[in-house]
Length: 478
Image (cartoon, rainbow, N blue to C red):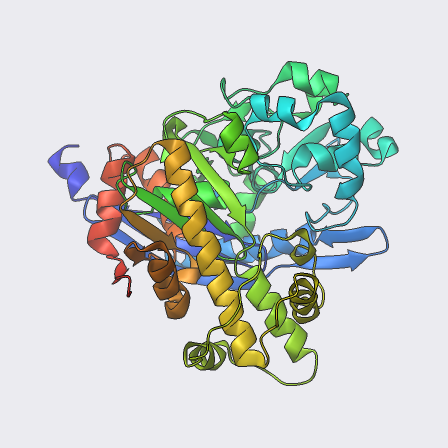
């Protein structure tokens, strides 16, 4: 990078979509600059329709357009947009038109697809090809549960961030980090697994050409540029479009000695490795090999995450009492009596519903006295998550041959002081918490590098994060 580059920060727009909310962010990035300003926030979540649980992509797209309009008013010099979101879910299209709103991954229909897939490809064989942890909502299982009549007329399948990029640009692509979560990408080659796709009876033409982070997807369609009020050419840049892939870019870690926890609705716990780990031990430990930026592999396990806590709080609020989470966590931190822990990865905790009752049922089935009172139940949830995080981080390090010395916790969970401290205590390792906005920062960093405002490998990008967003350290207490 020359002197002119080192002094130049560029403005980009990051669209960051989570399972419960979304936002559009103006990012400014340069050799010594990494800043972000949220210009739009909007709700997101499942919509129960007669056909099942769906995403309202039409509304989400409208929110994204409003947010990008606000971003361009804030920073008219923006020339790049990056989009990240959750994984596995998709829309089917015919002649560029969606064939209904995409199903939500928590929809119960996905269970029907598991047996159909495993009849053609047993799980052991699948893992050797795609390297993925068994999750019943993975894209290939969803496709097996699809209405055959809808598949028959579809001519495109686009994952959520690719779908939004298509609406903005008209370009049909599949970004690799998110494509790696479908179960249809070969973990070793990083390409669509044509043999598996054929064996499962999936029309190969549905799948778009693969594209890697930092590549340009395309320019905004003229009508979109006009609608957004763009005064200069703007294009969409491929980032780590799986939100965890973007988050891991912004973890200020040394991957040879650290594990990461990207903690939000889910807790993604793992290590970064140069190549997939396809051993029987990794398969039996329910680990997954997902694509990362710059060809790295995210060897991780999906822990149920803060979904258990948030759904518990929603259950209590349905009883008619609003709950302030900070106050509830303070009460939980003040609990001095020992509380029992439970398996947060039990499948019963996956769907929406009465989480407090499910937790009580788990304890009853295991002949363990359940905690009594909201503070104690909350403390039990935190302790259970911390234990799962600690155990999973150590397993990830062993499987990935990482000399584990530190755990980095990023995302919304980094604000949960009790969770961070108890993860440190239960792991016996320091926990470095933050940045909270790791996903958006990773999105911004890849766009900035693609525009030439910064250069270097992932470690260089992480060094910038460490300098501009230093994490908070939690030291284990005996």
